[in-house]
Every structure is written in C-alpha cells, then in structure tokens.
Length: 73
Image (tube, rainbow, N blue to C red):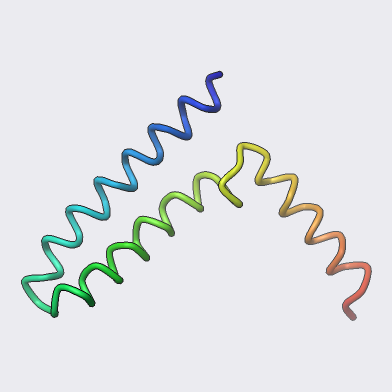
C-alpha cells in the first residue's frame, strides 16, 4: 500500500512539474513546444523515481542488464 501511495505522490509532483514548467516555458517558446518540453520534464522526474512505471522497476532494469550482458559483446 505504501508503494502505491508513493507512486501517487510522484504522479502529483510530476503534474506540478509539468504545469509549472509549461507556464514558464510558454513565456519563451510557443505553447505547443512548451507543453512538449514540460511533458518531457515530468516524465523524466516520474520515471527516475519509478523506472518502468512500476514499484518493481529496479528488477526490470536488472533483467534487461542481464540480457544485455548475455547477448551483447
């Protein structure tokens, strides 16, 4: 349950990042570009906290690293 709550708070913070940065960026660039940039910032924040959008994101990353180590030189 605590992981879900943490994920919800991360989503709220990402939304705050997106909204604030959209407002600030649209003072400099066209609104469509500002929306794109702010969405990117929000996604970077959220997925740095919850890789793969899951509380088990670290396990997915380890699995992918193992596959890379096995098949790539």
